[in-house]
Image 1: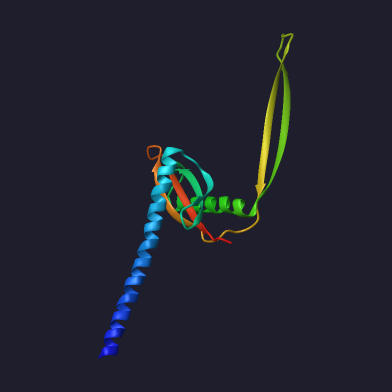
Image 2: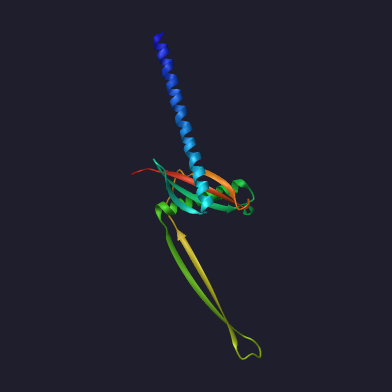
Length: 162
């Protein structure tokens, strides 16, 4: 009988300890979400950042999309996920950027006029190539900004101390 009561106490102890750990993770995510929302409200930003709390470092990727451009929410979510992974890949693995500049000049002479009119057109093409893959990007939160016209997505990944 004594061993059964010890077993029951041990199982209860394990049950309580597992529940408290799971709640701590969600509380951490909630406090991180609230912190990043306040940070964005004070000074809007997009792109990537590394944010630290007392114990951990987190990589965050912030993307904003216009709601009107997407026919469904699932398409918008997928585009945000791909853009978040692209930003993370560029941050962690680097990228190669090339630029081409084309300057086109045309001259028009009107009938009966003594002077001609020149038009200069400048076309710049920028290409970015990045190779690699980043795993474990998790959607932390998404919320509407600018009177509901845009949606902000925040993806994050915990950075391991090495």
